[in-house]
View 1 (cartoon, helix red, strand yellow):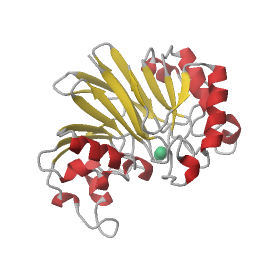
View 2 (cartoon, helix red, strand yellow; view 1 turned 135 degrees about the horizontal axis):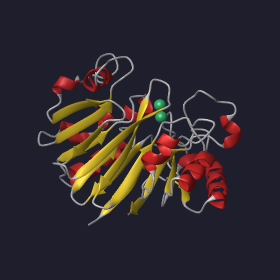
View 3 (cartoon, protein in one colour; view 1 turned 90 degrees about the vertical axis):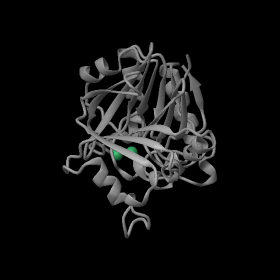
View 4 (tube, protein in one colour; view 1 turned 180 degrees about the horizontal axis):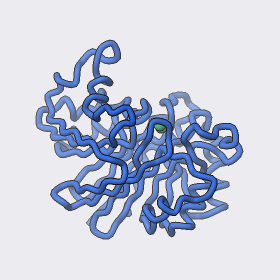
Length: 273
Ligand SMILES: [Zn+2]
Ligand SMILES: [Zn+2]
């Protein structure tokens, strides 16, 4: 049995491409979870492009995309995801209901429509299955082999957090999320005992004071939640575009001084659980 997680995009807000981002990476949200022969992906940010090329090389045809929400940094890789251009691909796309009332299919159609993109969604040769759910719903993937729990996250326009359980392993994905002044018992229960939590740590505690209401959290909150919910390992994720490699090294050091279970997610890093 093998469960592994590979980070293909760890940045928040917008891809960052200069030399100051080569160590931690500049692509936006995209995480591949491999559960034996099954492939599940959290979010379709710009990191999805490289992952798509890898999946085509490996001839992976059954793919599930779990979308936290449809802000640009979480969907901009989708039109460049090469498996969608392969006839044999069978792609499930799960997204929480939008506050606007639009379905996942409507949002992805909008993303791939003029004047934003030249090729409409209907012209894509792969088979796409869209699923909308209410953040708090539970469902399963791959004929019941993977359990998925979801939770609503505090974020402008809404977002969903996920917890995947496969055999005896659990992975929680909590991005984008703005923490409350006190730790949320609901969230603690949701993530409790996860083997890996991937957490929105966009701001330092000092920066957060300037951005209340912007929908993001801090590495310090990641540490408090890790301790309260007995998490085995926590990846700080959704790094701010202003956080260069030098800045990220400092953040990671401070976070590890608080709790050695914290580490900063880096593009191309693979963890085996
Ligand atoms: Zn984001
Ligand atoms: Zn967002």
